[in-house]
Image (cartoon, rainbow, N blue to C red; front, side, top):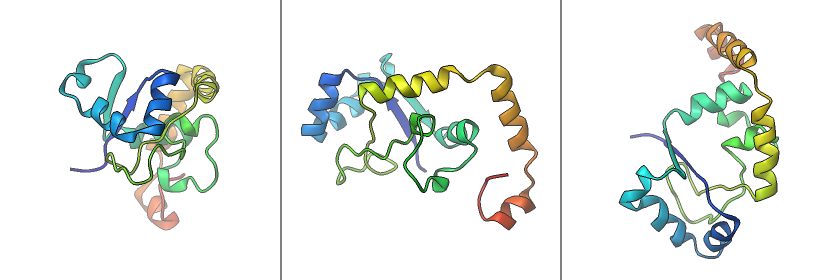
Amino acid sequence: MGMIGTVIRVSEEELNTFLKDSKALENKIYADESYAEDWFLDLDKSWDGINYILIGEIIGGLENEPNKLQRALFSFQIIDEEQDLGYGPAQYLNPNQVKETYSELENITDESLKNKIKASQNCTKSAKERRGDFQC
């Protein structure tokens, strides 16, 4: 196994319910029919690569509050500190943050994304080892 990522789309009302009762979130995402719903996106282990391509850092590189683009996958706003859903507790964005993050994602062009992927492919293993992380 390993750390997996799941992203779900919920209404503001549902988010407020989850913030009051995190068990409701667990029940929603682990229901058998959830995997086939349009609000459910299973990133599996690709979350790390997606995050790296978007921001050029692995999750360990986030030492400060995430910017609008970084929080596409990691907001560090926790629903329930005691609830572990794979990579720790579930994180969320409020509706305003969703709009801001979407706006940042919308600005990414095919060309800029291709350039980020090419740049990441040019990183050598020795450079990664020397730096102790995956930034180039």
